[in-house]
Picture 1 (cartoon, rainbow, N blue to C red):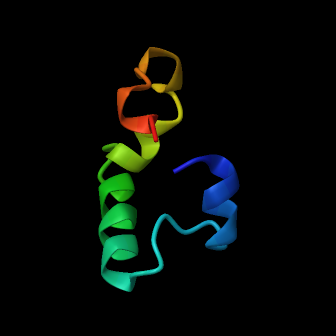
Picture 2 (cartoon, one colour):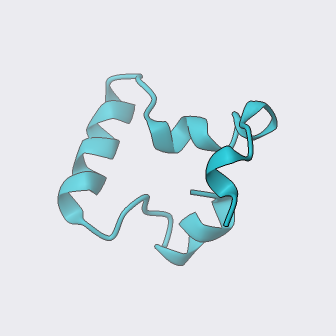
Length: 52
């Protein structure tokens, strides 16, 4: 999810409370998730899954 899309959720990664809770727990433990890694990996991501 891009930063622009994340802003739509009022700085949440998901509209689901349970997902948001786990995301916050992961950060409290000093870990990262796929949400955190998505934007930084943009330059190495292939376009295969983005094709329509």
